[in-house]
Length: 113
Image (tube, rainbow, N blue to C red):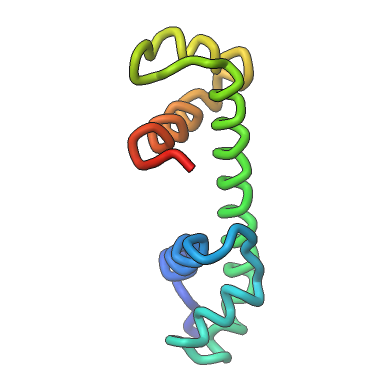
């Protein structure tokens, strides 16, 4: 079995890339990975790179959707967690509430953009 890039390496590269762009692409990630890895290793990891880029994009879109709903609801989780999460439950299914909470807390504590 030939060596491939690790999922952790590709994910870290995607997350670092998000500091410079709002739109990830396979080509952009390959360009960044090529600074440290061979084209052959990158080529062998193409499916992993594509899957990871899609996952990061989906996660970013989800977080943006959560923050838009949070702002629309006009609540503040730092003031009243129960009311805020009850309001969010009208926007998102119960199965997603943990992710919703995490996205809101990151928004409130790490920085509002």
